[in-house]
Length: 226
Image: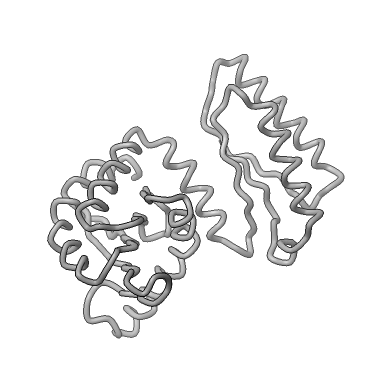
């Protein structure tokens, strides 16, 4: 279930929270406990420096958690001016419905170990995050934020035929020895994209070496998202 709260409509926030509580009570009566994604929407760029808004967000999040002990709930701050924030929230909800989400993550974890990657993100052509793995929460979050920019960059370079291979290598972004790889892969009949944060350039060969087995293992899993 996706539940939107307009954080700019201050006068109706309490009303929205009351409705949310009513919905949860109805679900409990029906003995239905779906994963719930709450979107604190209209968190627009011009509001991100407002201490008052941040305080309101904390209060809203606290009230949501108070009334939802029996549910699995994830809260996102979203805005139509940051479409990726909406895609990230939608992707998370979608991943909770996949019966193979843990198998997906296991495959990414194995691939990360074989390629010495700090983080891996798997996306479809629409930018939906199918699965991700990271050694730290920070690298994982940064990858979620930066993935759409890499995808746009890749498509632009590809459109103007400036790529000789199906991947982009970025360096000097963080630690000089580490590289960011954005690569297009084919799984069954679907075009997917991998975003990887690797220790050093020599690991690129490991990506190519282990990619066939990795893609093969994803074939059955990918159908759970179609």
